[in-house]
Amino acid sequence: MTVAPEAPGARQATGRPGTTLPGPSRGAGPAGERRRALTQLHATDVYAMVGAATAALSITWLLFHWLLPFNGAVGFVVIAYGLFLLVYALLVSFDEDGPAIVDRIAAAIVRSMGLLLVVILAFVVCYALIQGRKALVHLNFFTQSMELAGPLQPLSVGGALHAAAGTLIMITIALLITVPAGLVCAVFLNEVPGAYARFVRTIVEAMTALPSVVAGLFIYATVILGLGLDQSGLAAGLALSVMMLPIIIRAADVVIRLVPGTLREASYAMGTSRWRTVWHVVLPTCRSGLTTAVILGTARGIGETSPVLLTAGFTNELNLNPFHDPMVSLPLVTFEFVKSPEPNMISRGFGTAALLMALVLLLFVAARILGGRGPGHLTRRQEHRRVLASRRDARRFAERAPGPATAPAPAGFPAPVSAPHSTVRTENGSSS
Image (cartoon, rainbow, N blue to C red; front, side, top):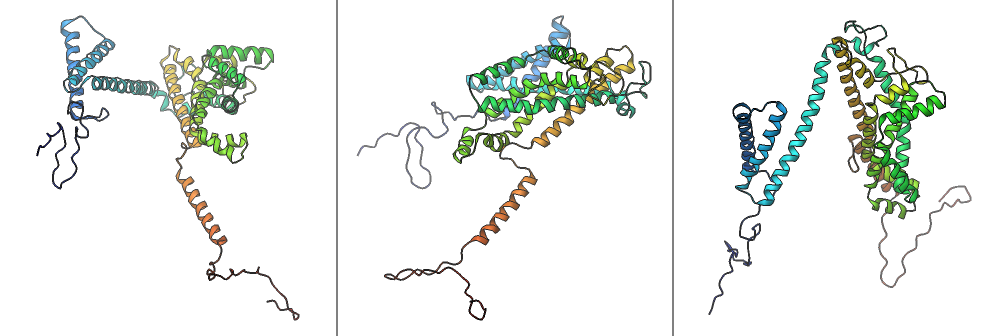
């Protein structure tokens, strides 16, 4: 009897007898090596990253202080980062092949860019807070305007109340115009396709790159010079709406386009009209994304300076009437304060910038609360209401359930027919 030789790489049966499958074992590569997932983080990756960072910093320090006449923090960081990538690729190549090396280098670049953005954002916020700390510690900075304060006045006099109120009034007017108009236009672009929709989308995409000064000049020429309206908060709100509208339309268009078509088809299959499908299916599904679109538009408009200067003018007094008299915003006041040579005015300028960031943060939190969560994610209150509705439905179904079924009739006999329940009154008036 001749026994066939065992196939190379065949799995050996251990313990109880079983079927032996030829070929390499699971998880093994073509050469018999075990496969390794690129997304897993191992100790060797951490050692390689730490070693590459240490070597890059050491070599860069030697180049700057001993070997070459280099100086400057920016050049030091750039050279150190380039050496870090080279050394890291060299260390990874000792244990990995080509695709794994490329994956590790790409991951290092992406994570470092994300870290750089976080560091820049933290630097901007901390620098504004540190430079404006002298003004922010005074309560009058939040409760007074600059009507009675001059450049040489101490920080205990004057504040940025007039700018904060003006910013809130202007951005409210702009949101009242752009949110309904932007959402309706985005729904039109997705739900009513055609040549006109393509033309509107082209115009919207072109307006996203519109310079802010052009928007201010447009409102100044049409509303102030053409219609005779004075420089006011209303004109500034119209100018900001011109800047915000294409951003909201473009972002909302992308979000609505991501709604699955099966949801629309299911709604149409039930006989629902188009506008009811949009109102009850499409918009609730992408509510969180629409909130993001509104936030992006608000961030674009709330930081503009030139449209406000052209359409609302400048004033140091508190003006709460958006239809008459000049009005000012926080970005414009920040610019006017910072360009002053007086240290107190510069501190007020950085304090105003910090107040603007705090205001944007509050608007962002309020928009997130109003926008709710994404589709399929319910808040605790929504879950509680859903549980209560399910209990009410269960009780209603239990009340409408029929009584116990009658026993089946024997074979050959017709099933009993239950007569409808009726009330029969006898001659003496009693019912049976």
